[in-house]
Image: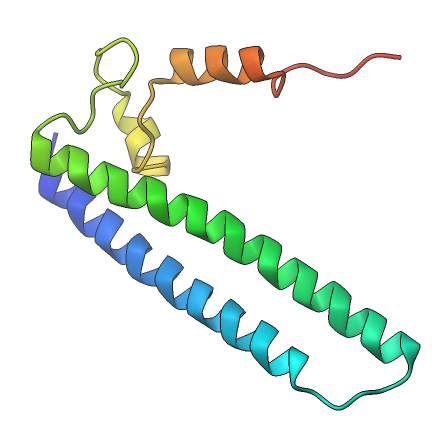
Length: 121
């Protein structure tokens, strides 16, 4: 496994996420300073701000995962599942270079959290 390849991908993603978070924070700040309009304008602004905050929160979580992956590179444990210790599939690392889990353990975690099941009536 070429760790430098993944380090470069992670650093690029970290930069992209930091920029996106900064833009979202600026947009929320700018929206809160905007002119006061009617109720519909305020509702649209509030909805846009809420969406921006949600996106920023997701980006912040991903940024934390990217930083964790960069730490794993420095510690020499990158590419190994944090649960079972087995190597993470190369295709999985290409798709999600910040993942700490192999596919099997990720699926187990999602099942335990109820993310992998379809709700029934």
